[in-house]
Length: 158
Image: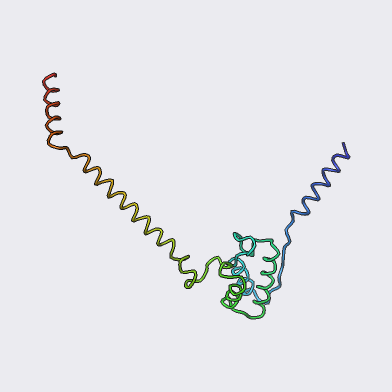
């Protein structure tokens, strides 16, 4: 029984050692640079993971981008210069909030255009439904006469 316990303990320890994530620490020359680092690392998307920013990703390319971001911040690059460098190297996809204009114009305008189209479709459907209801509720002269005869007969029977 103790052999089984030792074996299980060894397996759990082995699994736990793989579960620990690598924690990178960078020394910044000022707290302002550290704050900018945090903001930019959350703004930049991991090219491999695609749905994670480089701050949350453990992919090797995200680690490289974090290191590069630290180096550029310490070298005195502005946020715009860093973002321009990353976009030039990895494409506009690397930003969670791509710039407005050029190839991303449709990306920014698509939600608004789709909303306008959806409102138009709903409005047209409501109009056609109300028109159909008005047409179906109007009785012809023959139907009105038949209805009146049925009502008169019902009154006579009661």
